[in-house]
Length: 444
Ligand SMILES: Cc1ncc(COP(=O)(O)O)c(C=O)c1O
Image: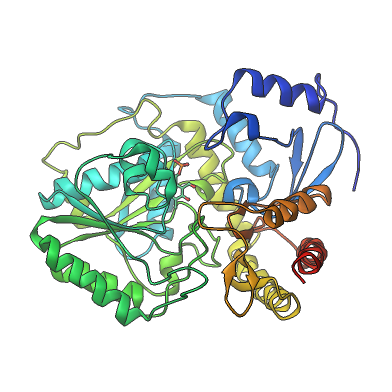
């Protein structure tokens, strides 16, 4: 477990203590946070200052898709910093030009114009602004089981409990139900879910609705892979009613699902496509809204009323170009597809062997396990928006054994970097297997 220690001027405990003293941690009561001190990372691993190694089974925050410490990306950032670290957004730079062209090549359909932001939340903010200006309407539909970011508009779009503290939020947002209703009730069909959506559209007045924003495959709210027909149906309803379809692929984009974008699995072209995370593999912050030609043309003679000091930041554009080229050079999207098949098998094994597993879901390297207290009643092992001693113990076991992943409510995730090998995947699942043995014993 322990390999070479990485020297930092401070010990792990000192780093944690000083970080907690002077900085705030997200979404947490500060007395409850217990961060892992991180000193360095490489490939699918990272190390504490004392040399404890962790297998990163969540790509940090589902974002380091290319893997840690990729020298091609590091070099591109270094070279760009040495040549032109910054130019203001009214200027044109080669990296910005090349990145726009490259994104137009890999995004679906006629999406070929991009507005760059600092991250995912701002991509969504700009997407709803664009949709409102383009349609002249103001309402935005979003789904309950969703996360769209922490800024004023994006947190209002968010359906999960992270929204609650920000209410009432921005005006005009209407939430609709997802096809998934939790581990106890399960899924409804694409037809049922689309009928509900159309009813909401009718009741709200289609002529008042600018956009419907949805995560193509829902990420932190449960790796919810839509039933076949659902996305096509959403596309058709949006087209029928002149509603802008916004696909939030901040988490599901850039190979995470085994295709460049999750919409590619269903051949659907959204009107706006939001991205971040895997765009630069988080080496530096960058987000973007991609738009179809007709929407981009709207701003030919009309002002695009938006801006950011760090829009099209050269370091970020260079990092994105190098990241995308690393995905291509190493065939990482294909690797995600291949390893995704292996992961599906390993997840199915867990479900077969452990009574505490209520459901598993995955697409590519985007995976989740839902834990239950009892297979018959399907009672979740922790309540919605809550935790339980059993889930806390599971998280503790992972940490002790050097597996880093995201444990949330009654679920935990399996989202390794796209460069993961079969051996590394099995290493992670072996730890999970032992952790679940312990959970099964406690529940028996
Ligand atoms: C689907 C989705 N949209 C938007 C965001 C917000 O992105 P950011 O944190 O870069 O603002 C996230 C972040 O996790 C996300 O998962």
